[in-house]
Image 1 (tube, rainbow, N blue to C red):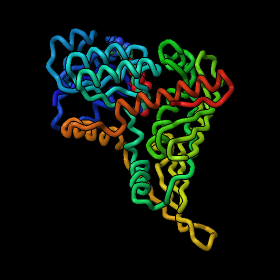
Image 2 (image 1 turned 60 degrees about the vertical axis):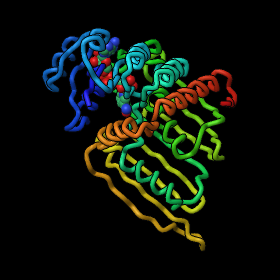
Image 3 (image 1 turned 30 degrees about the vertical axis):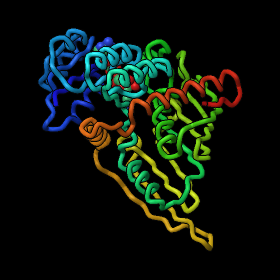
Image 4 (image 1 turned 90 degrees about the vertical axis):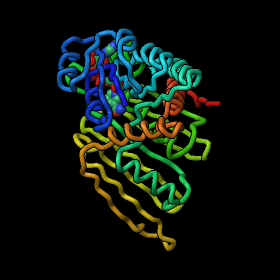
Length: 332
Ligand SMILES: NC(=O)c1ccc[n+]([C@@H]2O[C@H](COP(=O)([O-])OP(=O)(O)OC[C@H]3O[C@@H](n4cnc5c(N)ncnc54)[C@H](O)[C@@H]3O)[C@@H](O)[C@H]2O)c1
């Protein structure tokens, strides 16, 4: 397939490195000339500083959009309208309304839209889904998660720290992955109570968020996401009627990815515990990309689809509302 990448920063490079041998990266686009030149040289593709020119001049099948959030919606909609499939980095637009416009456009044009939810494709998370689907820990009762890092000097000047450029803070940045995973393991979210706060970084978006959520499957979930977690953390725990799963780490600075499964003993006491380690390089980008291509071939929704991106943004909007109103918000 012929591929283009719009937004050649950190994630654009990860996406380019995850393409398969049978993909041809035909063009790339970035508004920063230095970033664009280096990317085009490194990945041997035609550079464009304007995505409209690229759409006019180049023939391609799938576009990967990994730009600063503010500019994503307009670009994704132009790509869908010109009959291209799109893998759009999370979050799907800066808020629910932007996600809805994107999703509706994809449906109207009959094109595939995938949200960049690579966390579903981390080996620990993927294995947890298999364990759950094999009914090894029974029916899910509740989920508990923590995700965060401690920022970096100058972070308050980055685009992520701007409400206008990003759309939100840590709730939207890392929280969106956790909300997506809670939906995947626990069902659609119907009730939220949440609070957001800016406690340390001098920025107009939140650096911490806490939420309690309830789902259609009668699962209660809680999470805390943080930019003041001075030592990086990823922790996701699922408790079922017959046991539990604990996933920690995502590799790199988050520590080796591990999965622990504990099976409850009828007589009580310490459960039967098994441990798995996934010390490989981060395979989530390659696995997500291959799944997206397969979903196009099979003409079905991808795992971590545009719809999933829309639903995650709906939950985020409800958490912001809950914080403002100081009460539980129901999602119809
Ligand atoms: N899946 C994940 O885990 C994950 C992790 C980090 C970031 N992201 C997402 O990826 C996206 C990019 O993040 P990043 O960390 O790579 O940021 P980045 O700042 O490294 O890269 C963004 C690039 O977009 C370019 N850009 C901005 N406006 C543009 C436009 N109109 N046209 C073309 N290029 C434009 C910038 O010049 C920059 O090079 C964001 O949406 C972010 O939320 C996803």
